[in-house]
Image 1 (cartoon, rainbow, N blue to C red):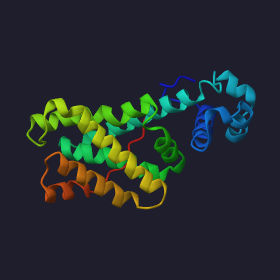
Image 2: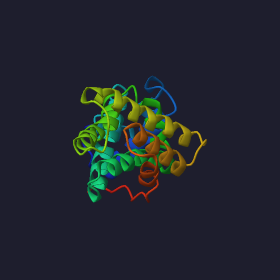
Image 3: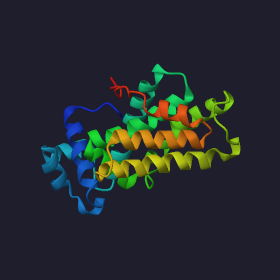
Image 4: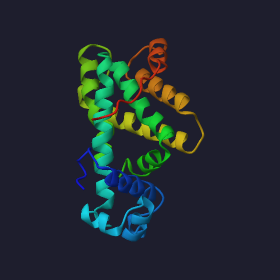
Length: 208
């Protein structure tokens, strides 16, 4: 199963979900193909037929998560042109999904800063909207500070997801606080940042 392939058949979806759930709880070296097959409700032959091994399992899951979430976020952001609202919504999409899909949230929380594909997912869309906001005068930072700004955003989202996954905050509270504080750090006035961060969050779009 290709890590970049967002379209999966039913068996592949079950395997992906099972692998994500198992890897969120333990190291890949502790997960056997037999255990993966049992968790997914498929035969071991189905695992091998989809070219999944214990060596490739983590990369398959992380790559699939990156491809799927990137497409869904991009599709969901087309309803607004305001870079500040787009950034706030993107951050809140991650935080809300960590609540709605606990296995997804636990995997992401555990590996977001160690898996390159997941790090790129947090930073990719934000970089484009940050430059747009800078060009429009919405943000106040130097272009050479982009990597530091991205680190602040990804670190803040990751920390908020931990609060949600561990049950310390609701996704609405964690999402609104994170979006508001990041926007204020970028130069948005406090009242406007709060308004943007508490706008009703649209559904995360499905992909075909």
